[in-house]
Image (cartoon, rainbow, N blue to C red):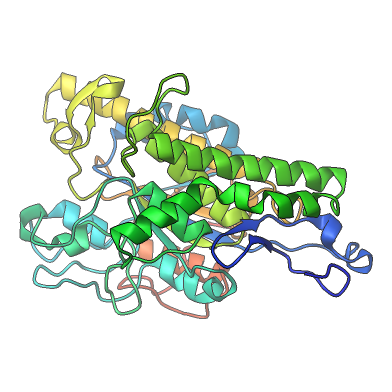
Length: 426
């Protein structure tokens, strides 16, 4: 493109087959425009950790005011001034006594009752309401990701449909949105196009493109580098290295760099590597304006992931029903601490990425973090605080506040969001 005839806030390197979206470069902006304040998109990330937490270690210190984090959340201490912890909110659930996990997940971001006989929710999740406001400005309206391979057929928790219990993102009609598990497929969708109906031969050809995507655009990147100032040259180098790093980690499945990787098996990553790769892909997708809305469901309904790799062997869901078993309680604490550590690493990654307005991607992103059950937290909100709600307001009120913060004109959300939640802007 001709740099003296106009510019795009984001650039794409590549040809018809392969392309790589790039961050914002100030030195490509016409001189007369550089004095104007740059703006960055508002972004939203919804994150669900399954099976709840040990609340003794999870809860923040009681009382509304400056935030004192619980023991389980100690790794979030460096980010404390960007956190807002809300205690006392309640949500809708399922229409029958049993099935709390199904009810907690279906209502997680919808504030609607889960119906035993329905494969759909009664309306959209909050991420899709936000996406309706900001999704038209990006390649992807939204991005739905999963830490466990999902399935939608049959019944799950107490007979409730898996189509509800294994999804947290729902469109305007309440239909669950498919979530991506395979990290290589996520990479393709974000940076090189995605065709769910491609044959094995097509996928193999695409894999060859993915293996050399940066090599294919290296000449263009070198040419572009000559037009950048020193700061933007460094940003270009860091970005291309980050994309290459993610690509390589997906290919070798997180193997030690000193070993010879086995025959490539797409998507087979250990949990530590998977969470890290997903966090990095979300960060790059936000930074490069591929999407402004994402959701990450770390585990399916009643997830029985085995955390033996951190000394908590056994199924997570089984452990979460601990009764008076001290050994299970100890394991639940270990699992919860690990999850919070991964969340802290994800937020730290977002904070490390420079945004187009001179701030960071985290500064321009509102992240909603919760679980399907308790024992079993941008947008102009006042952070670094803990807010207690003894009157037990509904999540629908919080979601209405979030929607309005992103410019949505809606006046209600879900079944209980009849008014915005107070105390967020203090």
